[in-house]
Length: 230
Image 1 (cartoon, rainbow, N blue to C red):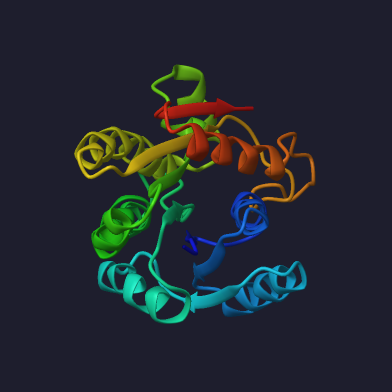
Image 2: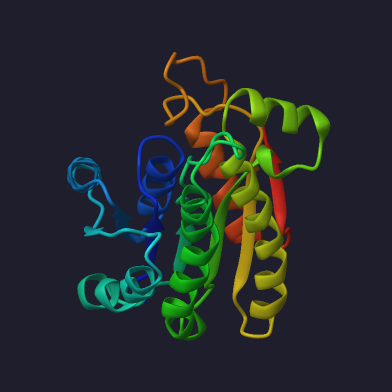
């Protein structure tokens, strides 16, 4: 039976490496994000590697759009076997000055979007062999004074709130999905990823391929809830 991974929040860095890794392992790959040009370029590169791929331009902060992805993916590539949630919004950098609507957006993308997409694919996952939900976590979620100081200094406070909420969500959803035979795992990235969205100076120390390998290990071993890299 063919398998499909839905990569939600596709872009350079981690999600591209995950798409390549799972594609190399025989998965069809569905790419979802707002940036259509980036989706097209990513799909072309994957096709060059012999991967079956389709793109789905989507605002993942829109709950209805995130939920509707399942049917669209099923129509083009078959039912979803793995949902990889890599979507985030880096808004509300200074919580004392930002419009609170920006903070809502970070939660809509990082938390509400994930729940909505999972609601959409839940039935497909339950019917698939080795179904899984894989979430890209971040070190900003840690309750640590040093991390908090960094988030304030870098003006990523809103993202820190969203990642902390998402980390709690991972635990809750893992417990809820266990009875359905669906594995959920998170890779918490503790540093800057080479070539990623935050690596403007090209100084990232974490290789995207290493993160993708960590996701693959979680997926195949299906034991740990969270693993850290960086």
